[in-house]
Length: 224
Image (cartoon, rainbow, N blue to C red):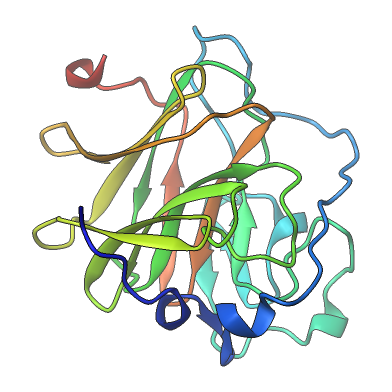
């Protein structure tokens, strides 16, 4: 089994580390009902935009809320509308739909970033945590030219030669499967198993450059 690597070194924002936050009480977020861009039917393709209400003040959305860019200085948090859905400590943003069933696939252009996380999280995950540091989120990440999979603050390296410009995420809710996909082949690079019991959202962490999401896609033939 691959050895775990340091979570503190990979989980940071403005000098804060996982260990510095571990003692803080965590609470789930009570979210109001809101419009969803996806259907819970297994026959429909997942389509979403990034939800500005969840975006940390260092993140700007663009291209009709399908892209996100990291600003190292960011906005003064006091100039960002305060609401319980927003991440205040970590550079994280969620997709605006809730996933409660089905098999879904989306892609992300990552060529302009050197540090990011892609995956899913429970819609009511605590906004005081970073994606991957708790049992409510499951992500694939890239930092220091290395790939890893992360959940519950445990990091396991993922073997991946090079850095593709674009990657796919495959989610099978009922099967409890989240997969990182090579879009060129296509083939599954790595899978993560979990038990999904509550609504999930596409989740993104970004500490450099930009990401561009592509949703509404069919699951590639080779992965069906």
